[in-house]
Image (cartoon, rainbow, N blue to C red; front, top):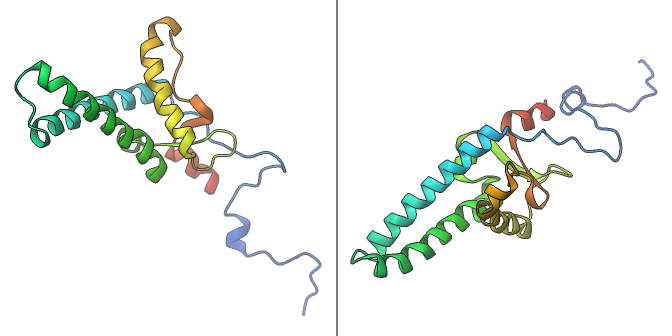
Amino acid sequence: MWSVNAPYVEPAAAYSRRQSPPGRVWVPKEAGENRLALAAMTDGLLAFIIAFALAVRVFHAHAGIAEFAPVFLPCLFAVSFVNHVVGTLLFRGSLAKLLFGMRVLRWKDGRRPRVLQTLARWLFGYLMIVLQILLEGASVGQACGLRTVRRRDERRNAI
């Protein structure tokens, strides 16, 4: 028998993950602004369509704007909340982000987002919509300690 001084490491485990220096965590770079903007527009369109369908089909609001708006707006906020907060907590991204191959993760350690982070990011997104013209180019992408990355870049570290 051969004597070995080093601890035994499974060959598959040895090549499974790139090792980061102690104290540093590898986090994928942020997804491009064009991809984020396209996902945001798609999420907005999906929320609008689903909220409109809910207001008309479920709550039967069709008499006029005075009846429709008080039903439609809460539906719009509820659909947006479920998509951006609940969807991000369960699936690590909204419908459009998943459709375009992106994930939301914490930018400091690359782990799943927390409830308060996703809620604050969702509310910050509405604030950003209001202030977008004044801020010119600021993005919701890294709000509240979260980052949206491409799934392909996240998997690259696992190889």
